[in-house]
Image (cartoon, rainbow, N blue to C red):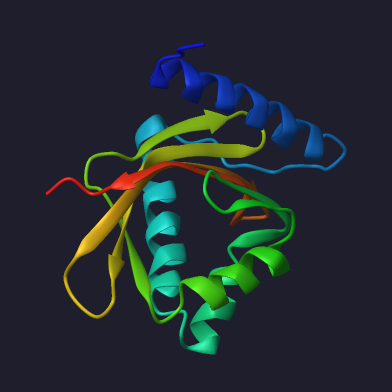
Length: 169
């Protein structure tokens, strides 16, 4: 079956949102009402912060800072790496495969943010991964992150990283 990429993204989001909403159904979620622009700015800030720590995760303090942005039960779906079901498992893979080797850069202009009423936001975009030993960015991928805002704190509850491909110069 040949499904177009936008349809695949919509299907993935539907499945992911269903899971995310069920996971928080019994919890009281306090979110701040924001305009679309304010929400986009808030997610831009937390995305930059989580990946600033990720990019310096060879330092154990930065890896711990990075980890704190993820819910303990975060589900991470990676088209090449498979699924991790917990923050500890995800951070273990990050420590083993990323720290000291790669940095993440969000492709400018690709971040799109959508509200999830009473919960948080969906962030969608494209990112690339660059070798720390040089200026080469060999690969990029699309991502979707489900952010939950609770008591003024943002945490990621679900991640999709997919459509990994070589970076086009």
